[in-house]
Length: 352
Ligand SMILES: Nc1ncnc2c1ncn2[C@@H]1O[C@H](COP(=O)(O)OP(=O)(O)O)[C@@H](O)[C@H]1O
Ligand SMILES: C[C@@](O)(CCOP(=O)(O)O)CC(=O)O
Ligand SMILES: [Mg+2]
Image 1 (cartoon, rainbow, N blue to C red):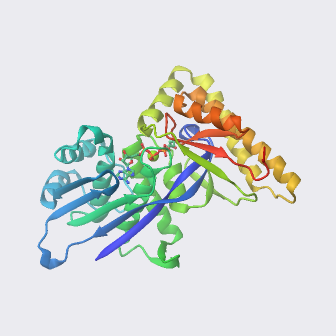
Image 2: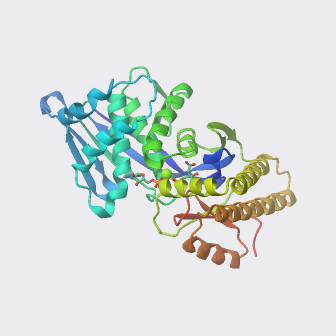
Image 3: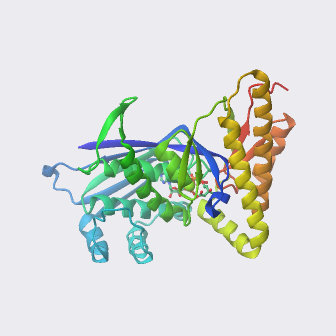
């Protein structure tokens, strides 16, 4: 039997990093997805192997299920009924299973994704042989939430085998989860993100799970209904970076300058809230559209300035900012920064 699940990546329109420290953020999912296929061997295959294939980065892993069980089962039940954090002790044990796979040095950054896989797989399905294949339209480590799309699509594939989870409504040929199961999916995916990001806000997995545009603060989402066309250009600087390290860098700066950083986070909170209000407010005519677009552009520029204060911009990002400014277009980094992707507002009424 084979199941295929997919989940989208995202853009953060305002509030990255500050959201980790309790500020509001606004994010929207994009139509680039990560897909996970999960296949169990037939009884006649007599197979005892758990295989993981990361197609985009050409990495294959395989473990004997007996070995995985031997390494992990003494740490507790393999079937926690509710989403559970992976303890430091368990991460260490899983890391041994990953180290044995000899990931080439150039790709060692992907190891946390493999640890997240083993934690989610064994927690939800226990010790069963299977072949799991991961493919993505998203650039990995570029700020478009590939880690969350991976955790959400993997968790969706795993949960679909539980009797308690019901899949019904057909959406463009795909089955979807009901509202309460989406909550379960989101919580498990968050546990995966924790392993990859260290200290995630939960924004990325939430927008990947629920879709559309959301406002998010301290784990709580509010759905947003946009009342204006939002045209944005995404530029990938192709400078790779690691979200975990950037998030840790902002936390260190916050420890060094608590008052100043608290003001920065408060300012971002106001920017995200105002931006959400602008997007949601009615647009009765072209004049109000032009006015709203102007506000949106200004808020984007202000958010970028504060991201610079947090120390997460990068020379490659500044080059994109200078280039788009030549055309009077407002841009900001999106995601963790340090390279990765830049968002540019390409307003409908801005023809200069
Ligand atoms: N398609 C994929 N194949 C393998 N690993 C992936 C894939 N997508 C995401 N990952 C995992 O997510 C990590 C990147 O996450 P992160 O640094 O948060 O960047 P982002 O979420 O912005 O893409 C990778 O190092 C890897 O562990
Ligand atoms: C920097 C942050 O706000 C977003 C990170 O997004 P990404 O992994 O760079 O796509 C971290 C978080 O919200 O968990
Ligand atoms: Mg990420």
